[in-house]
Image 1 (tube, one colour):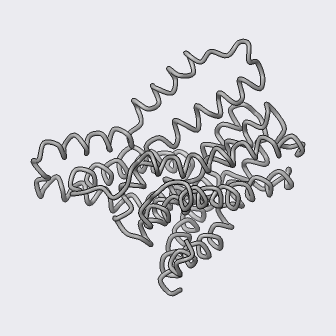
Image 2 (cartoon, helix red, strand yellow):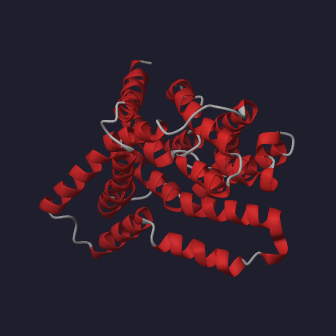
Length: 315
């Protein structure tokens, strides 16, 4: 339990620091956006490049991990679309915003720091496999869901597919993984100087991600659509990890640590991309905004419970 406390409290403590800095106008939204871009485009790709370039073996198959994680996500996505029909604040466009909020967890700014703090760098491979396609696949799915619900006749799978490919080709996390894999094939290893530089960038990723998350939370509010908000939190932080756990344990074969990473990531609260999707389409914005803010607060408790279950051998 002490290990969990020393993992969770510093992580959420830095989120509170970021939130306080934003509320005190010491860091504004523009600066917070810059920190977030550094995390996504520099720190995490550097960490993944260094890990993949120097790793010696791989414990599990990416397809099995993707089936467990994204299969559980798909089940939660469909459940959210069904439930949204009965919740007034979520029933626009076939519940696309609700499904996006249920599936899109805060993996980079919260899941990654939390996982690395508790399990160490050994989770880098499964972490990278999930992160590399998480955002593009969910943006594609949410766009497809919304367009089919609103106007199936005018929907173009070619245009949407091209958008997905552009997102994949310009995703810094994917590029970091690919570059690390290609460098590993050369057999040259990493010179101590660039290796140290990459290590320094990697080390900077965790604290900056958490502060950036705290800064971003200062822009959200909990006003309105309380029913929809709690529905989204329950679907995201209870239903989805349960589905992922069942698939990871009983459908595919994965190393124990990979199962823990998949379930931990599945249990993360709704991320900012879901809010951006809702805001861009002006659909279910209050409920999704509240799910991001309140869900992140709840995560301090739920993550502690989940990590205890993992350490006790129940997951």
